[in-house]
Length: 292
Image (cartoon, rainbow, N blue to C red; front, side, top):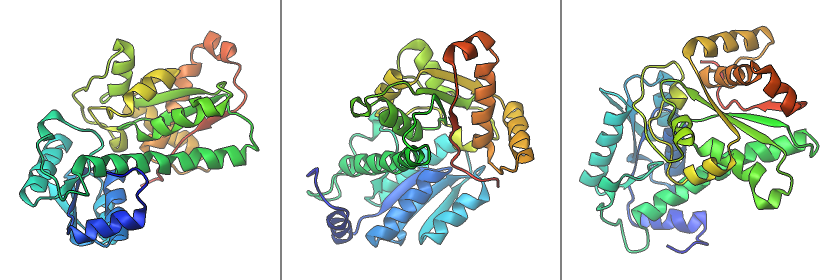
């Protein structure tokens, strides 16, 4: 697939091929793919988002608002992902997934110009580029001053990848910004991978932090995160709830992932000697969701 293809060209190819966009999601990915279907003009039954039953109601509503079909699966996210893959094979559709699985490699092509994996890779790139806007706007708000620490929630890893790419890329020049990632203790794939030095998935458990409740970290994000994350921690539901209440007391309404980043900062600073060594003046907590 040519690397310099425009969105308009890709949309035209998707329409010509009668592309069916399929995704499994319990959060932002589903809404992104639904919006992509709307942009490409393959709305309605041609864009189908599979959503696990324990996902918050607002996700399905947001997907439908973009003109896509939201299919609620009776089961967890692993089952939802499997259902989405089986459906993509059955209807000859494009499965837009954050990470590839070796069992999916034999999915046939939509057409000679639009390969499934190339298409999915492009969407992943767009997701990370979309997140990078947050950090570009942050640069403007800080008048070019480099924050000492960025605290980022991790699900699949796209947001953290964007943070590392922005602050640790060779073009950045100044590498003084440190990055702290946080995950639920019940879904700490990145934390476990960083600890062991190799990418690994974990069995997830129940948590209120639905936006971070993933077993794997995206394979494409892993080498970037491994090289660029300075600190990694996990928090439990109680810590996230306490942080949400604290932020609410300061007039900030955030969701569970937003509470997690404050809880992570508190956990890092609980080590007073580390806090003094870091010499933190400007700390930024990244929150991408509002209170539900």
